[in-house]
Length: 154
Figure 1 (tube, rainbow, N blue to C red):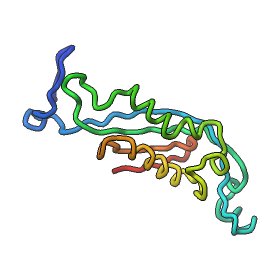
Figure 2: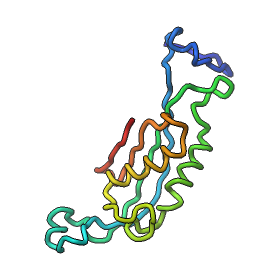
Figure 3: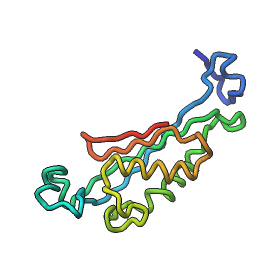
Figure 4: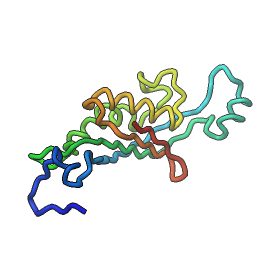
């Protein structure tokens, strides 16, 4: 196991030769509250209820969004990414748009999307991946409730 002295920076370019991993993954967490309804307009109420259950009616969740970024730590800072920068990106790309909003009606970039946890995670992935350096977004995890979560991973 590799150990570091206090204040030391690792030159990850020599990592694999010295037994260190080639990349490190860091995770940032953010929360938001939003309402949605799961339904297809072309289906009648009975079919929507049969497929989506109680979620076929308006309801809300307190979501947790986790974004994992992988890379080689910068030798000067020891960071894969500055968490302040990642937090700002998460807020600009996703959180500021969806927090305390109705996902079906209020979000232009979700129009026509059934806002299941799966579809939301995919949409969040696209918005984040487009703004991060290529290949650094490793995982998006969206927790919809204590019983339901979804992950999208590279």
